Image (cartoon, rainbow, N blue to C red; front, side, top):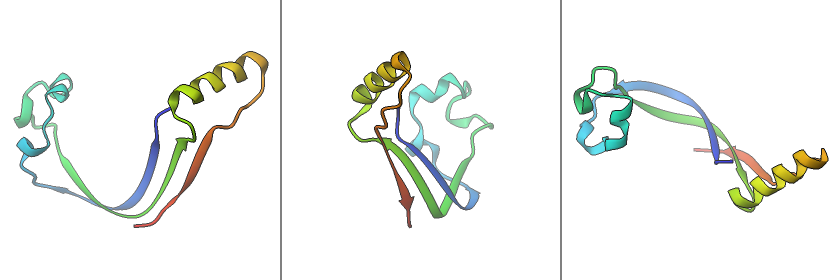
Length: 85
């Protein structure tokens, strides 16, 4: 029920000052902090993309999914489209 984005393009690892990108919550997965060797920044130059989202927000989409599951009917609340760089 969150917006989803798919992108394709040319990617390469790059050196980025982690202090500018670091968020404390990420330490949950990267326990060594900013200097964790498992972290790599990937810079992507997209050449195409596609998105999926809801028309009326996640609350309305959630209610429609629950009702649809209960009665066995699909209530489409989605929007989707192609993104161009």
